[in-house]
Image 1 (cartoon, one colour):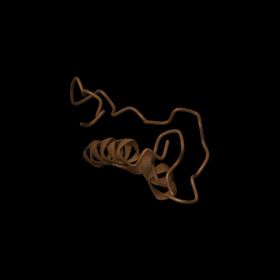
Image 2 (cartoon, one colour; image 1 turned 45 degrees about the vertical axis):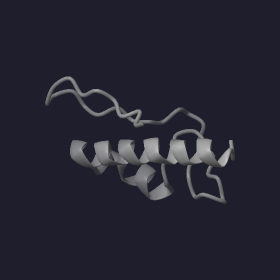
Image 3 (tube, one colour; image 1 turned 90 degrees about the vertical axis):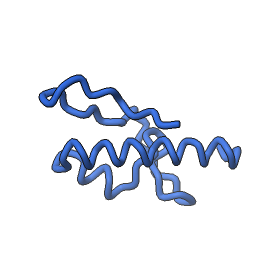
Length: 72
């Protein structure tokens, strides 16, 4: 299950998943707030909307993994 945002039109930008909780988890390499990697965070502004949606899909997968592992 993905928490991918709904994009209303071509002109609606894909929102950032940032939650303003910016701490990197050394075990996973993911931000504890948004679950992105440091590379995904650094590249976000330059990515195409299609690439941003791919990351949103990964975030959903990561969230499911965390829930299954019970690590958070």
